[in-house]
Image 1 (spheres, rainbow, N blue to C red):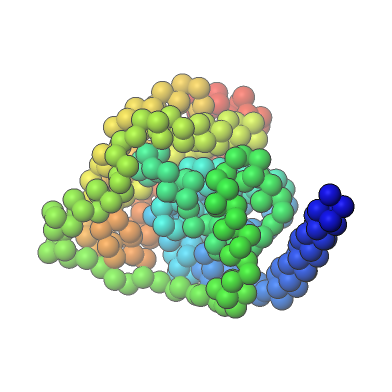
Image 2: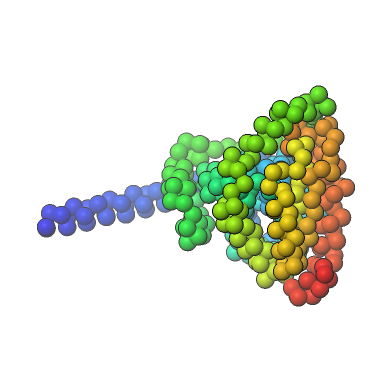
Length: 324
């Protein structure tokens, strides 16, 4: 019994020493990391400031991530909207649950914005991958408060382990600038092959129209909308344009969003079909740099400016009345 107690004590001591050494490595590594711009890294936490005011903040998938991941796209977006923008959209199909984590962290760090724009793709409500299996845990720095936010929200244990484990791998320890400037690729009408479009649409719904997932992840959207209301931040929800046509989940998602508008005064805009010209895309569902300019100028700027001017002053109740 005494030997077992000694072994347990040694194990605890060893784990403690390893934890301290690991923490020291992470602290030293982050201290020497360069300052990144939005177009130089996929990480949102590395570029997230403290106590900063933005004209607009973005959430969404890669359809919105590219608005800032390319240097010219980011400059175009801020120029067309006439305000500073902090973009928290994620690549590889970022879901509603990670979007909530980032928005809550953005506010917890003392940041504020005149308007939150969520470029919302319907497919993110119907699959676990974008929500409970997303790769953001691999490209974000270890932050104890962020880790606790995930853990206390019962985020999957495997994701929590990957979040910690990935910080000691070569990809993280030897990371470097990965600047993207612009995307000049463009499609032609010949690229709009019905078979390719069908395959892409099917890939987004690999778990079908799961009602259980829909009911689960729409709670995360409700929490985002409620937090906007509490903070007095106008919320604009836009389904971004693609060449895929309306998604399989668009019907139930749009119907549910319109129901939620009776409770939360957000602005909703379905733009999936507003840009049918293939020259504005570099693949079937992502805008090139010229497409970003056209979309921002003709479909986003007005609604954002109206939200900032019409709902950007006064308390939350007065803003709701303005929208109604």
